[in-house]
Image (cartoon, rainbow, N blue to C red; front, side, top):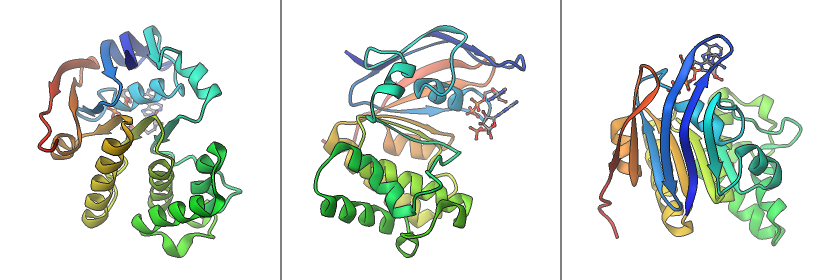
Length: 226
Ligand code: ADP
Ligand code: ADP
């Protein structure tokens, strides 16, 4: 059974830009798949379609056996970290991170503790009570990362989440992400154009070619740890 299945997916935007062509990729449950390729090859487009935030013009996409649109409406099992940090503007930073955990239920005290832990990890412990609009774009991105890591969703979609971070924070978050992935058996789709990051993090790398937005090959990574 697959977590995600892209089958002969094509995407042509209304502007006429062809972003993807005959894109086929099965993603097994628990895999960490990085999309690697040059800017403009369709990585973000593939991720947005998996999230139900854009629709393909050809082929089909299944997420846990359903359409992405159905999943998007029905559950909070999908976490995403996209370029637009999509935080709730009327909620404070801490509340934004706590929200997906609260929806799932459990001890409020534990939820708060975990939210504060991940916010410390992304360097925002002094901004717990700030509102998103009071933060820079990069800080909002870090809140979005903190929220995803705290929520530990079944499926995590991340679009270059660490690109704008300083080296130390990047390494900390990469390790944390790996640890959570292994512990929680999450499925992760991860967009990057950093080869080293892809090799370090992934169980599979989907290499894409720029024109016309096709999959070139899928590389299995032998993990150096059990
Ligand atoms: P990547 O993430 O690999 O950089 P994208 O998926 O963002 O690639 O973009 C693939 C192609 O589709 C590019 O040519 C880009 O300019 C185009 N594109 C992306 N989003 C849109 C959009 N909303 N409308 C029109 N064209 C778009
Ligand atoms: P990425 O960082 O993934 O390469 P971009 O910087 O290319 O993304 O695009 C940023 C935003 O602009 C995205 O939401 C994308 O969908 C949109 N976009 C990209 N290219 C175009 C385009 N040619 N026309 C309209 N919107 C676009």
